[in-house]
Image (cartoon, rainbow over all chains, first blue to last red; front, side, top):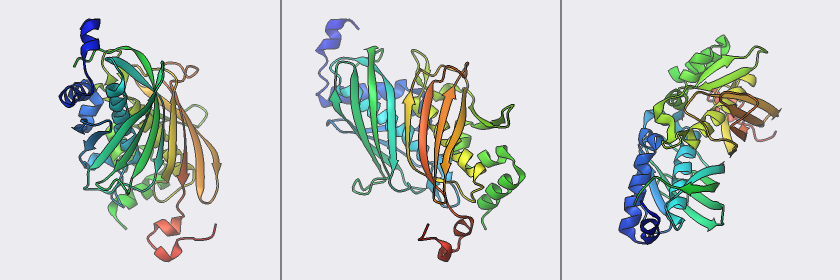
Length: 157
Length: 161
């Protein structure tokens, strides 16, 4: 892709956003290993879902997801939100990330992640995410993360 | 007492770290192993696997897998050091990524900073080839659970610390 093509992409257009998000998700091997699915990227807030698997348990006695599954899901979702918010097709790298664990995620129910990029500077993008199991007013965990803008991406629209 | 709970307790009693990891399904999913260091400290290892990759162009491990190793290592460190009957529950977690993680094994060492009756505060560092060139640093706080409380007696839950 040359520069003129990169600049002609309108990342506000829902069809374009969906296509970019699919490409982004499929390019990440670990997202595929987890079974992460892009649910809705039509708005600024991107929605990603993860189906329950026994592999994801941390406490099999109590039937609770391991909290660290949420870190991967949150990192990927915040990264996707940032990728869609940047003007061009740029590659990014997570600089730091914080999770607050408000309540445990219960077995047999999926996990939903809603992520948004809320600020972009010349070098850095800031994102946050809410993880829940169907009711976003009762979040499982909250995430904030900063990403470095590292150059042009290999992912195409 | 359920089989899973017996497994965790038996593994702790026997000092069998392999069985301890096996009692946590997500630790098994990431392939985490516990090695003994020369000075007796524990080293946590996440062996490289192609499906841990996050960026195939570099290539680099997915940041979430490195974070997962660090959180699980800190959790296991508290579990072993404080002989908890159940996995200590994390309150919060944060990670700084210092260098990109290449397609190779990740190693981790923890430092239990403080451990009271209710909370344990831990730090962890992750490296690949060179312990002096760490790739990530994490910290977390964990809620401790008293033995009697975890044994399933709701009356034993403490309200006063």
